[in-house]
Length: 255
Image (tube, rainbow, N blue to C red; front, side):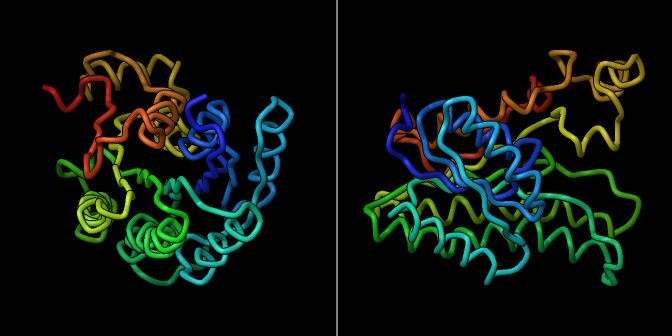
């Protein structure tokens, strides 16, 4: 297995792409630590991975809080001796009672959070001789995104920013045996996208993908199809790949 003996921390691992990334890394032999604000679901996911023969544990983390992120990384290293793989996949919508404009939350969760994790993650990786970082951006990180007002531009702005963050980390730490890459998913079936588009198998959702969005493959992507790319980029099979945005979108951006 290509990740045997590796320790992976997946932030935002309770569901969606984060969960699929944890499952894929565990299937390849990594010991995975699932970090999420939804501690209950993260525990359930870790238990499911363990019952399937993998090695997994969970930890609560607020990706928008630097101290919480730092503590999750410190706990991972304290319990397992090192950090080899860091995946940043946290996401969501502003919580009830959030008083700032949505722009601020989008930057906090999609850009500041990964920055905090990378900041403390590379320090841990340096101490153990190297590692691999995989950040999750979006096709909205390489093109514009339709928004109703300037307040709604935070998502695309943050997703553009994480590509720049990843490329810079790749350059700065290349001589430290630390690689950093970023995946730009297209339209992927996750609990979050289901809230916006409904059941991907419904006629309306299929029509939206094929006729409105015109995805060349004519279907939604599965979260597992992102997870397998995460596992590859985290492995030694990708040892000469760093600083790259990898688009996984069913051909959408090739049009």
